[in-house]
Length: 280
Image: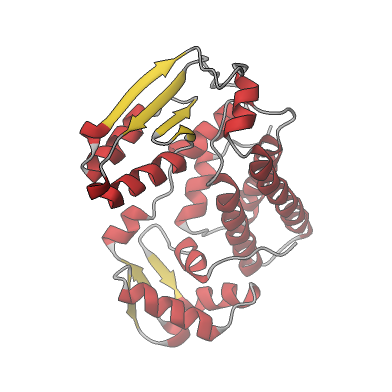
């Protein structure tokens, strides 16, 4: 099963811990992924123009260096990944408290209002009504930080409830199925599981260093595609067995196999390797 990997994702995935990408390795992995040299060159130029990288040298002997600001921004949210796997293992149980956020940002601050709404959805919130969102997680600090950054914190209200009802529906699992697009989230994880199964098979058959990097990049791209829209609801709110749990378990096996077979993996993969539990 092929995986669509954006060229920008490939470049950023190959950054070492000291912020360096060797152009020779970049072009080799890009070629393995079916990307042209021109495609890579144009992407590198855009990244340089955006101030995210500098380039020393030319062609395949060049060295790309990520700027300190871009390096900090590109750090993966390790705690998010750890929480994901802890919840899958039943180590982060839901306390049956719903966390609600309401905001009334005036039309004159529409860009900030839209940005706050996008941030709330990105954090896993579901809309109950216009300007009113809910999550089963203790997310107040994260939402408050986004609202403060956007300068709209005074317009935001936080509250919790153990008695959420929509119409006549008050069953937590039924509410979750109604409020979040669980079928779509599950479909993304089913694809991730299939990608991971195929890569795990390839890893057991043996692979060159470039092949290992290609597999790692493909896994990272598909993993991101699956988990970014996932609200990470507690298992008690999800259909069982849940596709996300199965997919993430397969990814953990792939990561363990990569760690056994590869040396000198870029920083991103060592970071994920530390966050993802080793299969027992």
